[in-house]
Length: 110
Length: 114
Image (cartoon, rainbow over all chains, first blue to last red; front, top):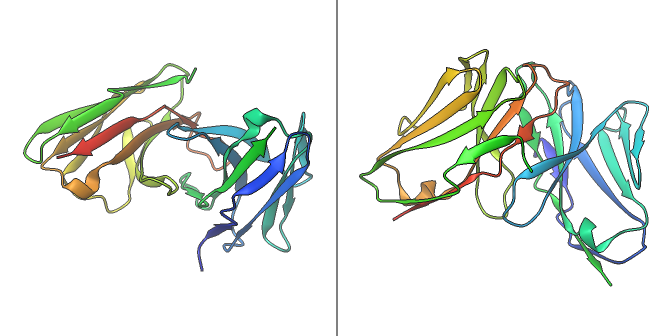
């Protein structure tokens, strides 16, 4: 079983739609959780950290469920510019080893 | 614009060449990283430097040699690479070596081995 698993998609949604991605992780000792986005042939960019109580940043909401070992990302009112690959990232070891999921591809169409 | 700067943006080299990739950040970050990313795959960690000392080497072949001359710079020296080493090489940094600190990536060097 992979340490971090995501549905690769693609998720095809119209502008204005709400879309949610889940990510599961296998190591219960995981300490920190992040969502990154990566555009085609570009570097990963931090979208948001994920906190135990859940957190929101504009149209984006992240949730963490430690009991079930998954994190989620909700995007409301999708924009064309949201089209990208969303990487679920988990920090497992004290030495800052980030483990990346394979990413979920989102395509927002007009 | 990214605050982690990588040069060159693109590099084509033969299997017998020696070249170096460079990474620079001026955010005062004390942890720096090298990743390798193949097409349609997630980044894979290669090396971690914490306070200019190598703290993690993910069993990377010796044809890749990292160097951290000071807290702002990170190099990756390349020698006798193989075609399968063609990939996007990403540098990242974080404030300190802490599991709660997110990493910030440079825009990468796209490497092609002939």
